[in-house]
Image (cartoon, rainbow, N blue to C red; front, side, top):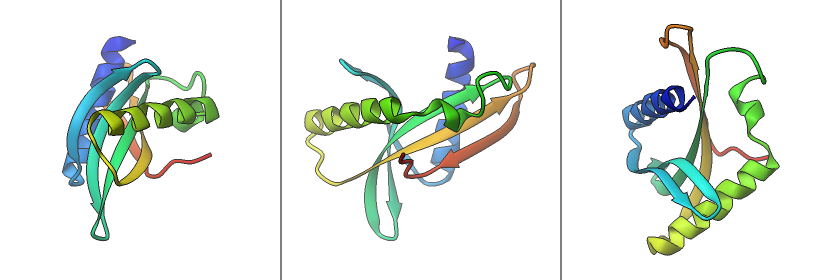
Length: 120
């Protein structure tokens, strides 16, 4: 699972970088858990700090990647994000994104989808 997760996170980081995101940190950990990617992006001239949750799937068990993000997980990412902001003296716009990565049995990429500004 960890090997698959690491591969998915690298694919997600590469996708975000291709889209112009600046990757600030990977696997940020604090007392509430872990955020896979912390990045910065610009949207219509505004700079956003983005906390990215990556979900990597190799089969259809447990549904689609976005179905693995619930209110509890969003609350956890939000708390972790606020702590990151305090630690790094960041005051600005925040957002949570999710990247779903689908791999086949051989570990090859089948599909990658990026959902911006995820909310429940």
